[in-house]
Length: 88
Image 1 (tube, helix red, strand yellow):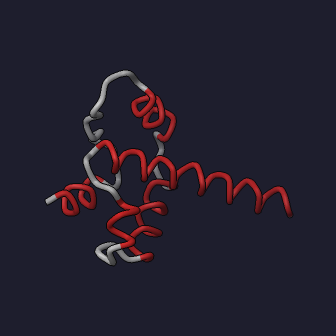
Image 2 (spheres, helix red, strand yellow):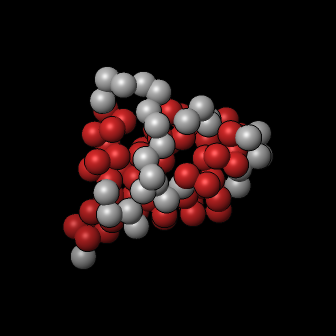
Image 3 (cartoon, rainbow, N blue to C red):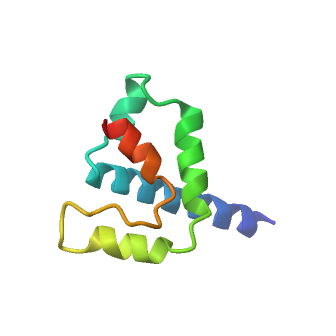
């Protein structure tokens, strides 16, 4: 049972990093918005949950690790609407 919990926490941490990195590439500082109370803990948790449900996280990580910056938001990103609304 412990390894299942560890795997779940590791997966969630991986997707949290993807969300933060992709937001950063879109010019959205989620940590700053959270500290200024412009983003709630629930909104951040929901963004990570959407990312966990993505079927293409490896492509996302490869895109973020590529030399091309800033990174265009991929069409498959489940947080695209959130990033666009926070950037506006």
